[in-house]
Length: 409
Image (cartoon, rainbow, N blue to C red; front, side, top):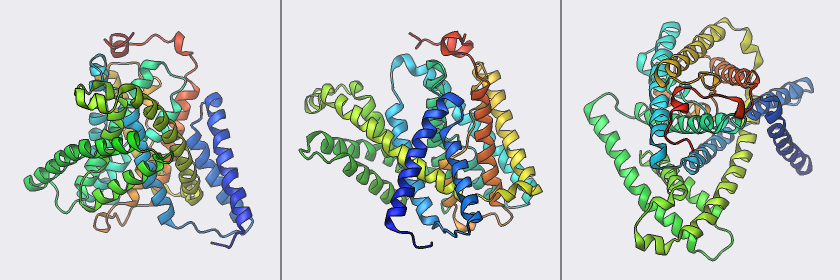
């Protein structure tokens, strides 16, 4: 990287943050996701630097590290958004099966497409299909402000479940051994251990948050969460489950009926911690998302749009994703497919998992332009759905599953 004075570097960083904040504001009016604007911002910076002969190399480790921290923030934010109650059981069930079945069908079709076009090993194609089958909650959740509450809740749950399902299956299929009884038993045992460990660590983290007298404690918690994630990866544990359950415990503390725990952590005390953690998580996610997508956009080469292989493979994958989602929502969830069927963006988690594909699973014929094409195209499809979604929330008549839900007020 060319040497840049500290003052100029600070100006660039602050300008990017202000620009991202501006994108977040205007995205509500033009209904274009702020993440897509950030991507195009990164592409513009790349064009500007090339025109002015400014050679700036961004180490891939920086983008990957930002992606990992962003991944942790996304999962924590998802946990803080998931409210558990008897009245929401039908919503949770529908959104979970929507995420699971759409994910499985999408992964199967993408595996077939990659195997057909690239003539590579089926297992390797399957490893590549998993990240491409995950709905990006980092794009969906900030983009649903103009929808009704019912649609918002469904999409938040679905995107959150898609993240977790995709990450768990990616960890399984990139392990030392797959598709054997031993590997399935070992993987299931790891999940059980992680769930049990998550409750213990969640109480420890909560004890630190509730009882420490220092004013600086939340970024200590985030550092501990990153440490837990990294340690879990080394021990081959699905450590994101710990982070998800930690967020869900804080958001659903009222469901814990143990008197001793309620005396130790009263609900009123938990509410103030929950509100502050929500705020700090949202702010941190905003900052990480800003620099991640700007840097990712900067790394995109637009000349891939002229490559026939990228257009053929990428177009086939996007078509498969859209058709699977449209058919499932229409005939199984039986809900209004507009604009829900357009919410199929791929983003941060997809990119981070691509960075983590082990060498032995690499597809030698895979063009990275395919990944860029899918991310850009799915984001543009979601944008088109939101732009043509003109009705105000109070003017929309929900169909089937939403209209008949027991959890509606």
